[in-house]
Length: 311
Length: 297
Image 1 (tube, chains in turn green, cyan):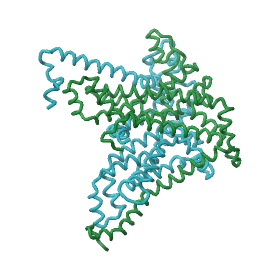
Image 2 (tube, each protein chain N blue to C red):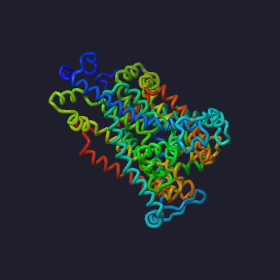
Image 3 (cartoon, rainbow over the protein chains, first blue to last red):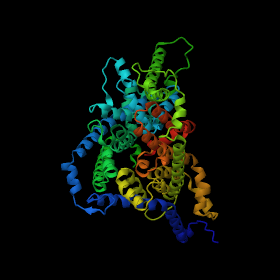
């Protein structure tokens, strides 16, 4: 058995050991390679190919060219309804979540006592499975007896019948989506803890007030975390499924107002078994998410501050 | 130096309160008032779930909302556990099995793959890792349809196999997270072991894994949470209601008995409870885990 003591002269002889290392490395990542081939590459190509076919699982797929896309864009009003619903959901919920989570994190970061108690309270809702959370909120939103409307009435307002009103059902979905906001709060809080205290102290010594320190130091140094929450938020909000399905079923009750894009794909794929059509809609979602994240990362060059200019 | 200039807070409260101190006290109260209001908002749904679980249907929809159930229907829990449409203990067992299997698979596969990416050199490594990160942007539904067809043609739908098998091969997010940890371990440790003739597998198993144990627990905690929450996968793949995990069982229960709100709330409470208990004991890891996801991202 050769014991290779790595000296300078022995560099050339270490080549076989490198090979051994490479073999071991490939062996370690082998499961993931299998995953990337079988559960990523093959299905992505599969979805792309299926999107040009008519396929009901029972019969063999039939090549129909661009018919699925044509049907989607020009004949299927549900498609546009779902696009509008999901766009509305994302456009309202993503900024709302970012702002609220950031505000809560900033307050928690002021050095309040009992912060660990607040932290637990804030993340507790994130533990509730979405199915249970949605069902609980169906009672919360009840017209007469739900605590939300009882509260609003106490404020002198005349609240809507949230889940039965096509105008208010989507805002209700956005509101119930805010319940697990604590996750984002914790992410922001962790980011705030990384901001060097000396920097803030130095600014305070130089006479910068709370507001100046927040706008001039805290927010810029937090932009990488804001970017992270923004990207995750956008990707996630376009794929809202569970609450929309439970509240609106596959038809998006009331009046297609909760027909989210993922519900539409689910309906086509697993209720109607129009796999080809659903695949085409999945490709559109893929493209939309890809373009949006690309745009966000592009814009990040302007507004995200990276310390030391790395990455 | 800065300590001299920035005044200490809260230490001179026994002395005569000066103007700035009163101001600081008011600020402190304001912060707590805000946080307590927000906390109540976050807690009301929990309270409503619990209190509704102890009411009957008439009480839930009583004209004057009952903030405290009167009378308290403790027997709802016994009823829900034995209710025909909601075999609780069976569903709980299914959820524990599902979460357990996925978590074991995830922890071991991701640890091994992350170790490979972090500590061993092989051709194409960085490219593969880049691809791994890129896959995080793919909406799961894009890969879901052909994967479903694949499992359907192999006759594995209707079982947990499609939900568990892929998780034994890794997960891009956890691989990414664990790789950061393996990279943080000094190279001397593995080099010394290598010189002593230890195999790469032994180095991984006996030296590296124990060192990243806290990170492995974070992955396990997240994996349990994710699996317990998972609704879409079981909804597509499982057919026999006796094989459902809790989330899907609760959904099925509500779909069939849409009017039994009191029992549905009891069932919801029973679905949430095990997770809350687990996480109150592991919250240290949970908070640390959330912190890691944001920072390393």
